[in-house]
Amino acid sequence: MADYTNTIAGRYKGTGPVVECILNEGNPTYVSGGMMLDGKTLDTATWASPLAEGQVVAIENDVACLYAATEGMPVVRRFANAETLVIGEIITPPKLHRMPTSTDSDSNSIAKRLALGIYRTALVEFHIPGRIVAGTYTGDGSHTLVPGVAATLGINLAKSYGTYRGYNFYYTATAGVGAIPLTYVAGSSDDYTVLVLLYGLAYGVTGA
Image 1 (cartoon, rainbow, N blue to C red):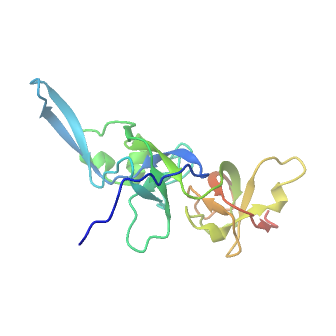
Image 2: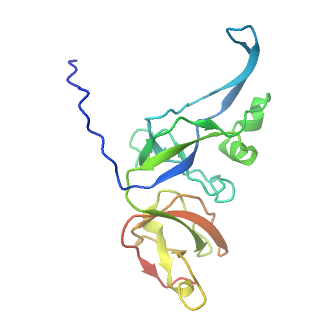
Image 3: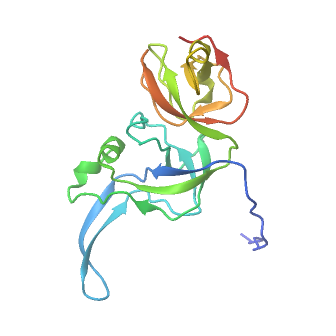
């Protein structure tokens, strides 16, 4: 296969948000006592699916990605074949939030890693122009709110005026547009804080 690539500049500043994201890089493996050039030893860790600056990522839509669990940060991962949640590019070197423990089973699920803070973070530039907001989501009692599924999120009319301020969201079956949830909410009729990427004209719904 011939290579016709070149180094002519072709990257321009976008209008999408740049936000610190948690990297879901799979299970870490703790490595004890690696030898350095000066003879000293150093404990290190490897990741099952490591990510790096310059790589393109997708929104992680695992049920563990609750607003509180992620400390209000989106979670991203490697994308897969037929992926529909590809969101942007890592633009800074990843940094370690907390070193894995010597017991690998402590962090063998995303829920465990989020609970213990065992992950790396990096700045990600979203290629979807818009604004990221933390709003209040009121569930309809049964349906879940899944990161990346834009059709299920509307602006809650019942909690948008009077004494209410800011963005308030409600579940809508299929008509939602212009708003992509970035954190997960289980099926409930309670109020939750949710991270949302607003990228266009949104859909108003009566709500509750």
